[in-house]
Image (cartoon, rainbow, N blue to C red; front, side, top):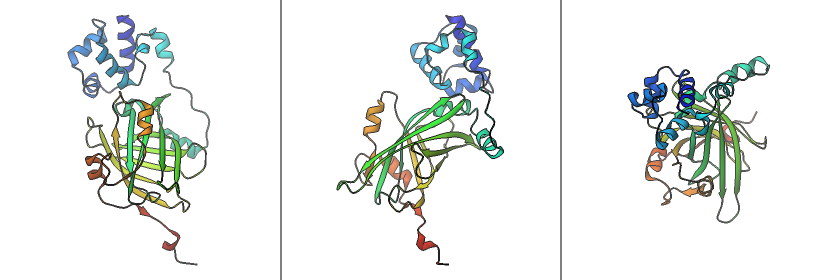
Length: 266
């Protein structure tokens, strides 16, 4: 068992610039990690979970037959695409190894013209798939008087470019506009709060393009998907359910929007 684990761990580490960097990102002692690599010892349940989460693999897979483990992770040949799509797609390929520490679930916060005077809280999940990092975003909100009911699901791709997390998403029902989010991690080891800008189209009838500040709060693993989704919605800016730090990071800026009035008649 320890032999299979060490071989599989070495296979995963071969993609990293250095073992020292892997240890820093996981938060493990280098001497202890070397014992795992050499097969001289196995990690505790706690450290095993941290290693599996970092490499975005199942804990049980780390003990699988090394040949099957490696074969399952060989790059899949890319389909033939038009040149522009190949160029754009290349920017999202092989991103799992760069973004492993950011994989997981978040609550995202931003202001939108659809909910004036309020902060929309969404649920975002980032996971690895064939070397890519894919996103699933869920928005659920309902006005008290029932005049607005928002239920949106987005899927997208994520890349780390120039030290910034770039997310491009589209609605799963193929209706509506593509949105983009760029997040600016303050520090490689600080992943609890991520802040940046979101560019999208409001969910209201006006379909107004807008840009606004956004903050992502990483969720603890013990929070279930059901509970995380139930917590989404439009919150009053002074709501006790809104983290004071989130409110501070969002600032007092209203979304920057475009309306037909911006353009003079021809």
